[in-house]
Image (cartoon, rainbow, N blue to C red; front, side):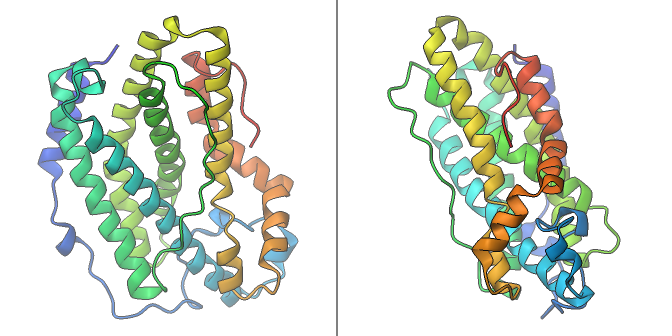
Length: 292
């Protein structure tokens, strides 16, 4: 069940750590796309492929810039949906806010932090790129929903999105070779997302314990399939043809296919998502690992 003391602790930490998003990042007038790294090389979607190895270092760095634009764009779109969904759930007597009084308080802080994050991501994309890339997430239809299923799946999707994103933030936030602005954005995001992940795991596990006993075997099977599909669709966005086009590849869709199906890239997805998947297995939400 939800641990009120833990939620109170992360709420207090969020309030204490509050920063002014408009003064935190010291933006430069321009960045050199071919002279600096903006995404850690091992996190570049083509890393490990022959196509990546054949690039000059300046081309790899340019690719890393557009990968950063894509990563920040994914965070913008994901957090827009998160903010909308969380706002709808504030003070709903039959929703997650009924779990404990501290939940509404923390959700207010959660919303404020996510709004700040979008200003960082959007600031980078608009100052140095051509703005964020369009949202291309594929939505899997669920059909008819059981009671409380939509609430549960909303928090599941938020958790999956944030777990993957935070794994990238965590590594890039301490990469000394990264452009200082890109590194700082990742660092700040990881620092605050740590609290969001604690909250998200507790809510997902609590809702599953409460709701799953009333769901039929068919409903549980459908929910599990939906979650597995969502893992795959979330990862698919990390292989964006727009990135490869802007980085100068003549056949961006062919490059995407190479990257997505390459064994090294598949192993990368499994490694990054390992802890998140294990959480879903340990709680009984999933019964087998999704195919990534």
